[in-house]
Length: 218
Ligand code: G3P
Image (tube, rainbow, N blue to C red; front, side, top):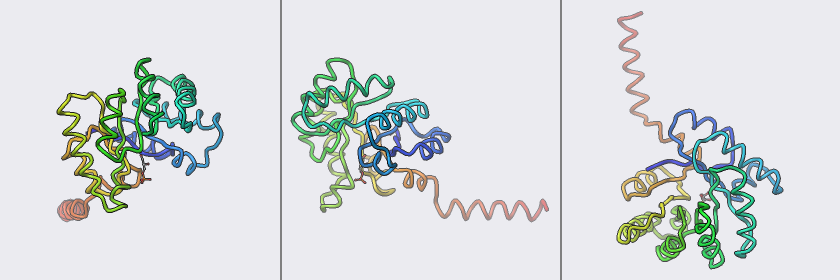
């Protein structure tokens, strides 16, 4: 399973890219707003900046809700950098746009996936990635992990090429289950990725090793 970082913050990306564990970046309008980025020009500049930091796919989301508008945005975004992936919401017009973009060889990430049927439709349209939102299902007392398991089964049954990009990941157990259930990618916020390195017994164990070494090597 590959990791993407779910952020529009370039400092966070820069820091984690240095550990060679990040294969790409996902953004969305909420993450851009969190960074205080507004206006098409500034958004585009941020996507370019991110593409320079990471050698992998960078998802940039459209804000139009009609196919024509999504396509117009997508063509502009795709021109910014070869690694840009067009993030399209899972709505009827979005499915039309994904089909058109796939025909033109432009990669897409179908976002806001909450059911296996939606993932099936996105795969049929030719989406490169689907983003099932695990945490938001958990928020409404539906087990988000079951969605990953179900999409994996369906995609494997029919050999779909679409990649499962698990999103809205909130805690360590989500990451473990994504890997166990065969998500191709997990997009994880900075704070959670940072936590994955640690275990209290690692810290304690290293302290003991160093202390024992220091006793005989003052
Ligand atoms: O990639 C989607 C993600 O940013 C949504 O996460 O925590 O807002 O549900 P969250």
